Length: 229
Image 1 (cartoon, rainbow, N blue to C red):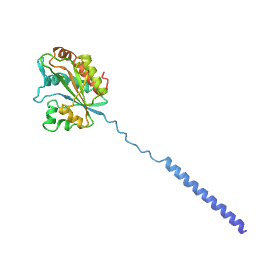
Image 2: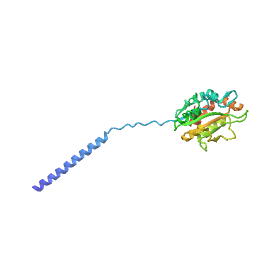
Image 3: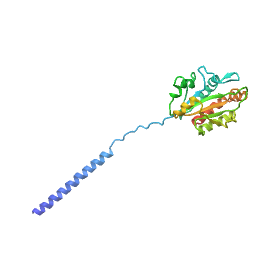
Image 4: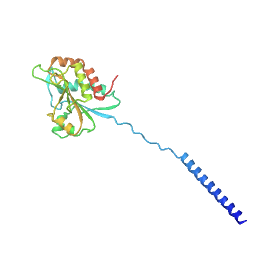
């Protein structure tokens, strides 16, 4: 009789453990099944910033030729066209350095300018070249490294198409004697300086004036890796 009761109690205990364990596992599974999903906020990719700078200004006229000055022509003719196409760029952020100021003076005199620019931005400066008399023809890109970047190559192609390249440089020149550019270089800022053509050359300026809109559109596309319709 005792053995029978012992066996019976063992069976009851085992069945109880099985039932309790099964209920616990079921509860755990149910808890996992109804566990609320956590909504994770996905950050939009940061747009790369391009800062476009018109050369000279703020009392510095720059080079002179063909009835205008470098600072005036860049601001009155090229700048409006660049802005027109810059607003059409969606995948990048294109901003303009204050055209009422001269970035070189701001940098070298007031220790602002290039010292205060976003270190992760790309800076593109626009200029016109000059030579004595009517000499000098074509443009080129002043680059921040010894070898041109893909952007530099595209910008040089724009110059070649609409104005022609300066034979002295074959599209590019690497210079370390431009103090404002040296500040950008030391801060690790990527930059290009565009000499679109010679302000002192009548033919260069005729091509630039005639194609100013096309040049601006092509420059924005070359700078931002875009395709503007």
